[in-house]
Image (cartoon, rainbow, N blue to C red; front, top):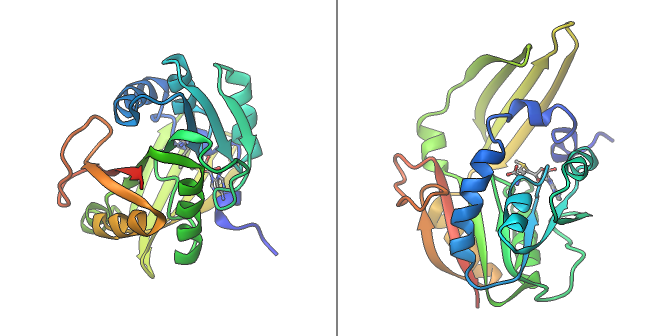
Length: 240
Ligand SMILES: C[S@@+](CC[C@H](N)C(=O)[O-])C[C@H]1O[C@@H](n2cnc3c(N)ncnc32)[C@H](O)[C@@H]1O
């Protein structure tokens, strides 16, 4: 049986496609997240990838744990160092005690990968490890904008590689087929597939998981959320 898409996609090569999501951007986003987390010490970056935000938050004095399933990305993170502890695990079955963290981050669409039951399990797992009155910051795509402004195909060059991205909405998910062609002609291709939850859907899902929604922002700088134009849908939940 083949690997699920979220195993296949996040291997070496993934970081090259999202090279513009760099440490400078993560530093500014982490600074905003720090204002949302409040006065907490222990923070979980759930789906940390190569630790962009985890490193930036550790530099701000938080005790950060990064969790991810991808060995390739965790290895990349380990070479970068910077303070956080890293753990390999699945977002739906977190290997931490109840209330282990004062704050939990889910950044850059690290949610919506599974079916509805799996996504609910992920939120329940995040809630279980969040201390009472602790915060969740969920940075998700803005489904309304994705639906209204989907670009079916784009092609670009990055560090000598050609990156082709083909996008479609199917069965309530946005799916992106990514093909990376190296200078010598070698190809690697994968699919990314994310359930298109609206701002209202996300509010309901957080409520069911046991978070009160305190705020909704349209980006990771604190801008207001507008369904028709916001780049992101960032929910701040407080563990009830
Ligand atoms: C879109 S990336 C975001 C990474 C990071 N938060 C950032 O902003 O750069 C999503 C991350 O979720 C991880 N991931 C995917 N499925 C996972 C799972 N079932 N359990 C844990 N991590 C998973 C991927 O390996 C990847 O690093």
